[in-house]
Length: 206
Length: 151
Image (cartoon, rainbow over all chains, first blue to last red; front, side):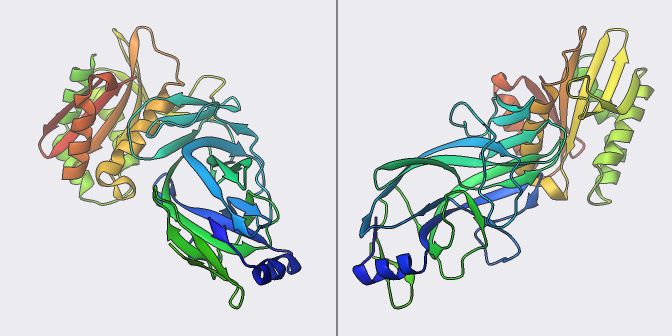
């Protein structure tokens, strides 16, 4: 839950910004480490949820992930379009082969969500997740990684969620890593977050 | 040739393989070439980097081999700096999914070969082979662990 007082809401709306959440996902393409939501400004992250806030904002999600492929240019301010996606939630460890424009699962065992590109050319692959923001359901990407032919991407979502203000008006927008994000470890108990309108930053209440 | 005979062919070359490992990273290409030589020395025909048949001609098979009993499509994954330890299983699992796109040779087999040397890698491969659903054999000799997974 994210609570924002009247002054905070006015500041956010006056600035034309949104409350934005990003999930930290450990992601690797064929063993080349590429952690996101980091201090490395050269890397973009996915604004998983970007919304116009109310005074009290409730956000829920299920820990089920779908894989997607996108041809969207992986550059700043682009909104990821999911051109293909798995028909069912991914199974941890199984390898999802992208072939003939669609995903097929190859059962296996492991600790990552794995996507293998069997098609010619480069695609952006990532995970998408369903969430509910103030009772509105959304289904948006949480991460993306460019993957060449005959390469695999390995994704491991963490419980680390970053909350910040951004100019992203759509969920699934590629943005620079935030400087003043509140990063919290959201376990099964959830968290309550407040907003300081003096510093324009979020803080954890419980 | 069956999977055990194939595994034994590789073990017979283990002294050279261990020497190659000590050279450091990026020895998978060397191992591909060595594998072709191992197979040829064993009386099989073998070639490396062969395109998959359409519609997956953009993919490349590490090794194709043939004897009087059949044809063998082989993907190779070795432990290296990039996939050290248990991480080798990521590559092996991906190769299993990849080689499933290669038409089943009949007669013959599709194999993914994993070669590891660290404690973590050999333990991971051994655990993988102990699950009968994975249709794999594993053995350890001369400081090398070799997994042959049939797809």
